[in-house]
Length: 370
Ligand SMILES: Nc1ncnc2c1ncn2[C@@H]1O[C@H](COP(=O)(O)OP(=O)(O)OP(=O)(O)O)[C@@H](O)[C@H]1O
Ligand SMILES: [Mg+2]
Image: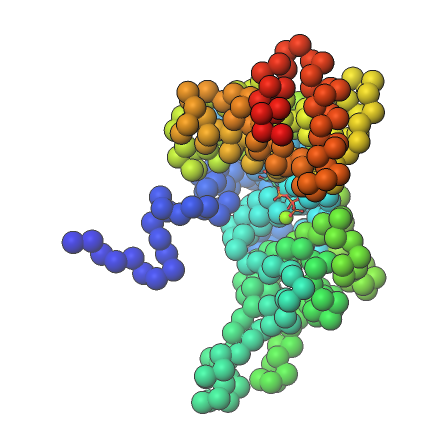
């Protein structure tokens, strides 16, 4: 007989997407073991060890920590140092620059918990940032501790953990403003109970916001002053981007238990080249100017084009990732607007792709699906 698991927990093997602190529990434990530097109050690791967790590196016992973020180390140092002060951290950038990814890994490394998360949307209510009520209890017993429903923010304050806010600028202005007291006074008043929750040491906030959303709900200057902003850039070189894509594709493939398919580096390089050229509006050699399509063509999209390609190759192809497996995904990512983007794509296909002698297979595959 099997014992039923308690509600809300599932066996780790069955979880579709484990949290960073679950997936990398072993690395985090090894880092903690070798970490003899000072840890800020409430932190699981020292700032140095948190940065090593993010950027990767070797440990004294000869084992390796895998890199999570690929990009300038200095940015991560600034981000981590911010968390050790009384200011909150705002990760800003265009779509797909790993804002959410970095925020999750930072929370996992600093607090060992990346789940205290508020998702910012136009409909995010104040309860998501402050607290709500269990109405059945509230009606039966009146306001009491038992009737109060904590928000992730309140929980993080009590536990001395990192609270995460996704897409901060999508939240309505008045909801954003409830953060001001939390960030400056580090308390959350509960007038109904005539009490307050005072944040314990280790509490801080990491928010993400998208450059392209600017104007949806601009941050008020009062709130902006309480954040240190770190802007995450697009990958600097094609090599960096290829590395990011191949790493993530590998991890995702393993997590999805896709049949073993060698992720053809050639094909990854090709997808990254197409995306970079169209995004930048110029070919890699700088000779031909191009029109850019309306989509973002981010690294994140390159990752999903390759992952889809691998699934096609594994289940319907000969097990090797080929041009035909990625062509459909690329066209889908580039042609978001059926009229204007199609023109941009056709022009790129006929003037650039067609002229590259070693891209014949790719040209043919794209023609077929365009
Ligand atoms: N520099 C990078 N280093 C490591 N991974 C990266 C990098 N850039 C992008 N990625 C990968 O891209 C994927 C998407 O990143 P993420 O969702 O964090 O982007 P985002 O900036 O939050 O985008 P959005 O604005 O759409 O929310 C992740 O799987 C992440 O691993
Ligand atoms: Mg995000």
